[in-house]
Image (cartoon, rainbow, N blue to C red; front, side, top):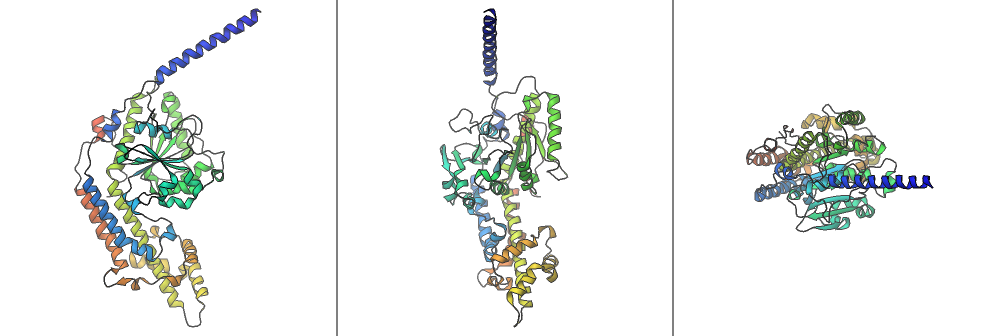
Length: 473
């Protein structure tokens, strides 16, 4: 009997203690963090010159359609690279992509940046895997959700090409529109967390291909980690392979840093670099931000000042992308034009070589098969480098043209000398004029119209001015 009473008393004490700890935790977690530095650093109160920006976009769109797209269509460049540029992509806002393992705080970070905490449209968060869709948060006149099939069907948006991934994926794509100053200048994309014990085939759609589509179009890529989830599995390794060549856009975020003591945080920081070192083979390591990105106050007895400065540095990095969005679009279209020009020159060289090797008794299929199987024998790629001063690092893979001409017979293409008209001019001349004159002139006009302003780091005291990896010198 006494033993039963003692057990009951012990259980009652445990319950009282748990209740007290829960109330104490609620009191702590109810303290919201001040968000004024977000608006200040991102200069959300500053009105932009919408007319100048719209005029520059229209000029860029016209250059693309009149000088680049004709060669792109004549030589079917989209079938080689499978990247068709639409008007929606040209006029779209900068895209910020959030990647990383499950439950590391990607959705919480977006909620914090947009102030969506406790609102009806806040992104659902939790300790378990919660985000199973690709969620696009964009600007709109009112708060509403948009189904993926509607986003893909709307040609004015930049998401029409996503239809190629199938209807199953479109069911996992959702858009959220809301009137927000930050979303007037940038679009956020939240992605499903990487789960290493699940085969991507079980998702029902090509997850890596969809990620690649967003990676190719992202202006800034936040790869978010949790101090307790630093292991690198096959799916995360595949993701970093897809990020090759985009290292300048990558930012590593070590989130939930206030859950650790300072000494433990230093060990975790080193472990993070140790895990990622084999996956990022670049001379300069990516920038790592260490903080806790959610609406509630930092945990007590942690490096509050450090976390605040890190957060402001990240916001300044984001602001660089917003301010340079027009320059980035011009540089992107010019880079695309260079690739289209190289493709046109290569197809033209294949056509010329085919005609030179053909005789009255030759078998066209055998002749062209010999050319495609061994283009170096006929100096196809070397002749392009010698005559046009093209960098060898910009040349496409030779094997890609074997597949390209397997679908598109060589007889379907005309040489560049035949791609001229009295009114329209020659395709090669137009695209070269756009690359060397028109696009650089548009870029110069944008830069000359900018007025130097006060750095938000100087205004907020973050103590560090991040490098501008986006401005094209």
